Length: 555
Ligand code: ARG
Image (cartoon, rainbow, N blue to C red; front, side):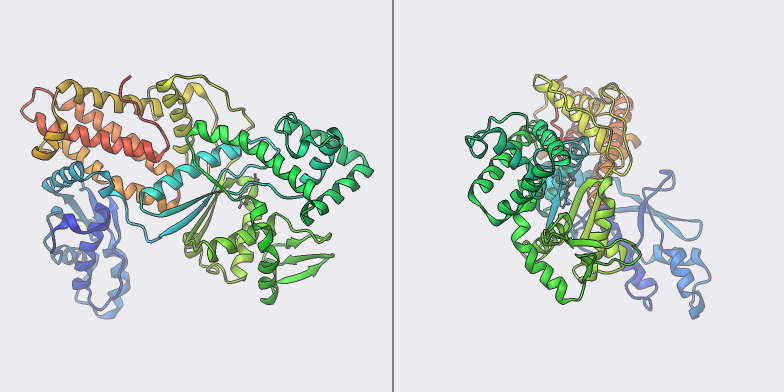
């Protein structure tokens, strides 16, 4: 077998390759067996286990096989393993589970390589080249609520993880910059500023208040309502002063959002709803040709199996809506941008819309039908629970306080499974014990100070030194470092940043255990242990980076 350092992929993927070879030898008559490799739940059994024997046994037992049960099958899988520097030893447990202990030398060598060649060599390999992440996406002239904030933070981390995995990511801000609300907004502002400031001045007051006031007029004054509806027509027909007013309103909102993005250090590219407007007619034509669009109650709709109400794509007044825009945007992302994954990060209030819209896209043959897993890998709706409306406070923190403060908020959000609601509590998230960013940032700073105080020249050590990992806590920490890649991978595949948070937290725990039980500076293993500290700090920093958190080096 080739040098195992050169097989690409995470440790788990490498083990899967090795087991795949053994499975092919063990049961040559069964083709394409997916090796099932998992981290051992109980470390006393080993580091990884291969779980194939039991399932394979039930597949082959009726076919006159030489094996007499899952255990002998597991035995054979073990015996047929090609020699590999990764595996130290294997044992069989229960119904043919093959438990693997990873070689200490292999762990050490892998870390040495990473220290010289950089953490990028530990990036997971994904099957996808280009992805759209649709996140943040607030609505013009309306307040950015906590649901948008969560979407911004979670979406950014998903984008960062994919980028680290060498996926080209199109970070899309699908802002709500089109629709009937502009009619009443513009009409109201024309009335309030008769001399035309609306089309040019940034100084027209608080947009949200204007929105509320115009909405009230719209609901209570039938004449105003009529004018507002006419304004929408003028805007969509491209009448100059309506276009200018619209563009100016968008610009005012945009500046407000930009401030928030800047503060969070998050980059997005705006392609709002208006961008897709010109594409809607031809996309609807395509859907019409496929026989998907029907007339219902004066509107044009798409019926969805299992839903009583259809998806409206052209309103009774002939206008397009949120759904027709999303269909056009999906068409554009698939056909023009050639995205293989499209990830929507939005609050759970939109579940119904997305279910309907994805079902319509499946009917059109744009997405794989029925097969949930396939559909999942192509187009995923990420739903973020909408919390109670809380304001983003305007803190004037100095640099470190800012890193910790923002890190704490992001981490508190990301560490939760994104499907669960969370309570917003500064006390909890700023706690320096437990699973918080503050605790993790402290842990990282402590490692940096250990290295600094040792006075060692780390660059020299990285090139010359070697790792030993003789103590069980050193080995455990080393193995955990090697598992970085597969955790990023899992986090990407399932779109769950909390997997990465948990990994980071456990890394910190493993480090603490190591540091408590193994003397670093002044011991005979000083070089090896300093390198292990350095590797831990590098992996921690990469985790922080992926989570959009700024590390601190001193506390
Ligand atoms: N602007 C929408 C809202 O705030 C979210 C947009 C989500 N993305 C999408 N492609 N529909 O409710």
